[in-house]
Length: 537
Image (tube, rainbow, N blue to C red; front, side):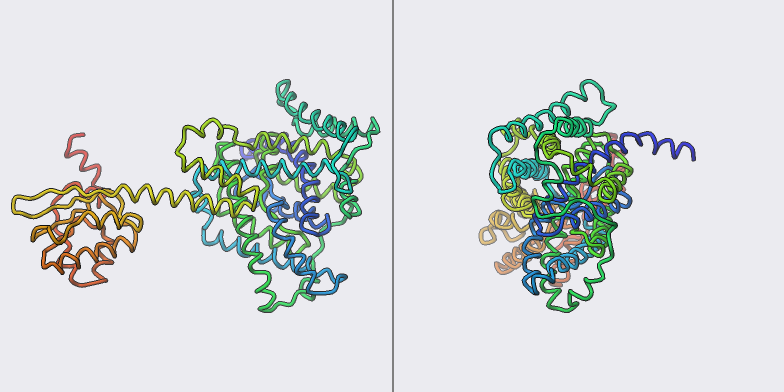
């Protein structure tokens, strides 16, 4: 028992300090995303707290930070606007439709976990991953540029601009230089504290978290504990029309949330050289969003920027995420006045360092060393992430990669032809037979000019889909129409079953009794060891 607690307490200091740093960075992000979605700042902060603590405890990736995100907030804008238009302005119906949508979003995400759909993140190719992190780094960078504008939306000029740039540069300089002196202190937290002290004691007139909230129309960070939203049941009618309205939004939000969460999970896996549980993360994200919707939050998912801050700050365990969420609640309840004094410049500097750490700079180095198709995928995913959103970018990247893979494999089908002494023509098929290669497969045969007896050997080929089975069916019919005999050898068991179902005549065409050690070893992997012994390898 002592050993159990010792192992889990070994990184406690780093987890706690890193969690505090993350909590500070979560505040302006959650507030900003709430403004983007068109809701009160507390709706974003409550979401960051509830999503963060639930996923930290029950999620499949210790050390990963979740909360309100910009990728989801962008989709929520039209949802809230359309919801508000359904009633009087004072009713604020859009907010309650948002809560209902977040609950449905959570249910969809939990179903993804129940049906173990999280494993499909493995189908995302590496160029898509690199494009994802590059695009997300650019999005984070662009989102921070808005902090260089005043309340009227005008860019800073003169002294205001130089002071802002100086404080951002100082923050980045501390974060860059401190680890070279000591790694025992979390550089992001130290940078925020130092720059905040300079601004407060130097009486600098700069934008702070408090002024940022007030300029956006909010009244401040001060709030109470999240309350159960009983008004959802009275203001949102539970009927088919409501479902028809919120379901498309819920589906898109669920997809974006899971894609961003699972890809962030993969990224954290690579950084920490450990392995997370994707299906468990789906369940945790879904459960967190259901709770958040009922308690007045805007929903959320994993946050790559805050997750990287946590990992780089030494946070590795669940404690770091729990501390970040609890500290955020403490800020809301008791320390709102202090947090409102933190200069925006310090938080922008932290995020700029996250951008530098997130961007896959190695992608420039390998552009001339990887296939052109991978370069196109990498650039396309980066661009689509910036232009549209993460879900569209990743889906497009996977589709492009799949089409390229199919095209390349379609060209690999081969047929080696030879004649047996008895006059039988043998076609030995090499390569995968699937929808992309059936045209090339059909071109290999000459039913009109071939001899009376033909044999097609599939020992070096694999029948992959229904299109391939249909191609074999048509090939047999073509030879029989010419009055010739055709035999098929070494078809896989599943392929033979389907062909037998399609037509009884295949029992005469397919050769079952085969004396070929290559075939038996391929069909029966358990015989592999025995086969090695026979060949004295």
